[in-house]
Amino acid sequence: MSFLDETQSDVPLLSEKHSGIPEFLLDKARKAKAGIFETRTKPKTTKDRRPVIPPGVDQQVFDTALSELGKQLGQANVERNDKQLKDGWYMEHPNTHDLMTILDEEELVPSAMVYPGSTEEVQQVVLWANKYHIPIFPISMGRNLGYGGAAPRVRGSVLVDLGRRMNKILDISPEDYTCLLEPGVSFFALYEAIKAKGYDHLWIDVPDVGGGSVIGNTVDRGVGYTPYGDHWACHSGLEVVLPTGEVIRTGMGALPGNNTWQTFPYGFGPYSELVIPLDIRDSVRALTNTHLVEYSRSQTLEL
Image (cartoon, rainbow, N blue to C red; front, side, top):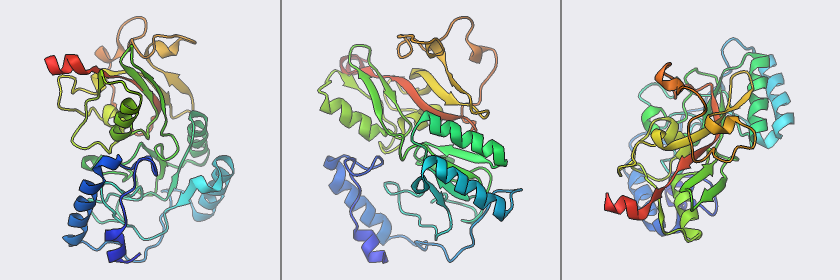
């Protein structure tokens, strides 16, 4: 694609892609994209490059490992990072590198990208990584550019993109003001779903831009602009795949069949984070879904 074609190609909509935008923002997005591309001074792609492999793993073992994972997830869901790096822009962001890098572009790139579609497939990826001693780096959508976007902490890691196929809104409760989301759900998508269902009494608290993952922003302790701005404080339960491949649910979700998981964030006994500080940005834990508290429009306006 030429520079002109890339500049003039349309911005993806939510109806076309999980990371797209609502249709009512299309004109603004087109203008923003044109402004960015027309004033860009950085080359839009890198030079021809050699693919990287995970540290401590030779090429033959890595090839065997990727082939095995492709059989488990489907070959279309396992992709080598062996092409030119294209920066794109915020609404068409890469999962191959940091599009706003301050280091050499090749400094922090994954060796491959994989796209699990369920909690069970995330488990398979983690067990596979343990088997071959391959570092993995999970992202939800990779749009937190202040933290390096999709760039892995260790060069050559396999990037686990939890957003491309795990992007469903599993539940919205207008009575409890809660929702259950997968990692690929953006603030745009949640807003559009609430509006489509006619829940006019619900309102969501959004950070600067609505294209980021609700879960990603929450676990990065992101903030919004209403009195409910501490998004981490508003979550109510997580489903997490641990580095061992085990799955845990926090809060009341740890109890089988419990119906208060979305409304009560604590379990029985003391609250562990008051005793042992937890690093909520630990990238070896893959969050597969979470519950979040939504807000009453009337209450927010009164405040």
